[in-house]
Every structure is written in structure tokens, then in C-alpha cells.
Image 1 (cartoon, rainbow over the protein chains, first blue to last red):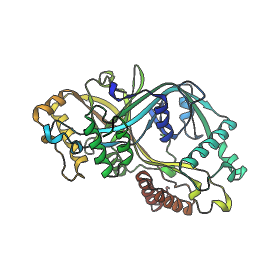
Image 2 (image 1 turned 90 degrees about the vertical axis):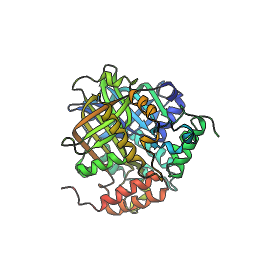
Image 3 (image 1 turned 180 degrees about the horizontal axis):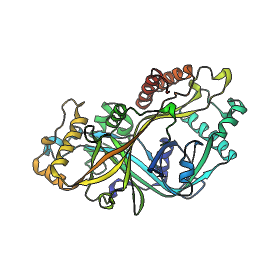
Image 4 (image 1 turned 120 degrees about the vertical axis):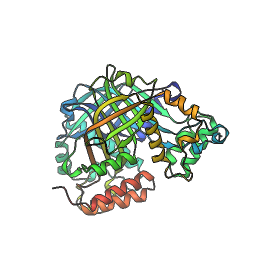
Length: 211
Length: 216
């Protein structure tokens, strides 16, 4: 990924936070027809290895686990993105030397994919994923794996396969207007907020000094 | 991308619509340094080629355009709305409990070979089109000609135009089609009550899928 220094985010805790808040990662691998990509919700375990370990499950019918096992893969996580109009820059009327751009924050996790065709691995993963997302979505009565009949869960475990990626390289690009005057970054954020794009607006406000 | 029949999303017009509404594509290529992905806003030319042609521009300083091998395949992934789906939204979960959470999303992946197009006018046309597309909802749309000509000329020299003629389109609409009717309706209500723009957008897809004929 092209990564000018002012957009590089290196703090592991910031990268990990983005991956947790936006856990639907694009798993990119090589398939028989060229490059393949599969969107999958990932669990991030920061205690298992220096850069963290990703875990997910795929349908047994999805050929990716047979094609990509023991190969280099890339998992891409993406936060809110949006078009930035020069209209939001307070400095625009002064010189008009602005063009539109697109802002976003992404994390790229590289590593080797390992297949975990293992019922215990899957049971633990599903229980943790469920606990995490029920908590994040603030369910009044969080659903638990134990709420479903055992035979039903056992049947589901037969039709999925676990995968694991120990991250060997973690790269973050936070393109949030850090290269602009503070008033322009904040002005563009205000313009986004007015249009309802609050998540990106918030990220841009936090990307440098405040007003 | 794995595409089970009940998640089919292969109507090219609908795929084009998603790519245009969510134009920030993740462009992945294989290079000598491994898999490389860049995030770029794409313009879709629906008229060129059987499956359309994607256009974007990268900074001249971005090594990707020099690393493009002849005929190397690449893929551009476009992701629409996505959201966690809790069984808490399913009205009859207490009755039999035979449900689990899932994640819904809409994705279109465009495959093709990327080429560098060294043509200043093609680049200018692309930037104008991208600007018009994105500014159309602004109160007073900004235009490329609002900026001084010398400033624009300088920027044009600093970027490279990339063209990808699409050879294959893959789509997946994962919108709870494999759940019970009442649970799908519950999911629409749950998403709408979540309050976020993303959840509301996902609700529209789940709702629309309810009114589509089932896959053959």
C-alpha cells in the first residue's frame, strides 16, 4: 500500500482498535482463477502473538480453506470512508488551490493462513465472537451459544471450518486530512457531520489538534 | 468469493449501482513484494467492455503502477453496507432456539488486468467525471475549473491514470435470505432501530431481498 509518512499509523493499540470495531475483514488469497477475496468477521487475539492472531470460520463448501491453507494471505480491515469536497475547507475562498479527495482508515494484516479443522477451536471461537458482538451491539438480553439446542449447534459445526492467521506484518493507513491546515481538516469534518457522516467526521477531528 | 445460490447477486446493473454508490474500491495486485492493496475511488465506465471498465488514478510516487506486470490479474473489491445480525431480533427464537448470529453484507468484486494509461486528457476526463458524480448532492457543486489552471496542471503531472477492463464480476448479497420470514422482518426492524446510517442502509437491503423471488 502506498503510504506517505503523514498517513502512517503505527501504534498497535490504535490498529487493533480499528480491527475490533470493524471486524468484517476482506481475506485476500490466491485461487485457481487468480486473486480471491472473501469478507469474513474476524476475531483478533492480541495475546497469542506479537502482532496479534486472527481467527475466523468459513463454510466447508467455500473452497478458500483448501486453496489458501499454508499460503501468504492479506486481511484488510476498513473503517468509515467518504468523499471530501473542497467546499468544506475554510481556506478555499483565499486561494482556491484545492481539489477533492477521499478519506479513510484501513489496516492491512499479512500472514500465513492455517486451517483449523477442529471442533473445539470452532466452539471456542463462536462463543467468543458471539459474546463480543452481543456486547458491542448492546443487546438487552445477550444471546449465548447455549441458547440454541446442542444438536443444532453440533450440526452447524460440521459445515464450517476454522482458519487462523498469525499476523507477521501489520500496516495502518489513516488518511484523515493530517496533511492539511487544522482549520481545513476540522472544516471538512464539520461538513461531513452535517451530511450525517459522523463516524468519518469524528475520526478526522481526532487525527490532529482540535479547534 | 464464495457465492452460495441463496446469496446470489449477479445482476450486472445492480452490481454497477453498488460500485457507483460505494466507489472506494480496494484494488489488490500480486507484486514481487507479495499481495499489495490500495484504496482508491473508482469511476465506472459502463459502456466500455462487456462488464464495464474501471478507472482510477494513483500518485506517481505510488510504486504499484511500475510493479504492474504485463497481463497480471488484479481484483477490485467494493463493499456496501454490512452489519452484525443478532438472534435477539428473531421473534420466534424462544420457541425453538435453532438460530445463530451472522454478519450481513453486500460485496462486488471486479476482476481484470490493470493497465497504465499515459494520457493527460483521459485523466482530466476521469477527474471531472468523479467530481461531478460526488458533487452532485452538494448545495453548490465544486468543479475542477474552480481551481487555478496552473494548479490543476501541476496535480495532473503528479498522478498516473490506471484502467481495468473488467473480465469477471462476482457479487454476494448476504441479506439473511436463508432465515425464516419472520426473522428477516425482525432483522429489518432491529437494524432500523439501531440508529446508525450503516444499519439503516443494511436494513434496506434485507428488506428489498424480502421482496425478491427466491433463487431457483
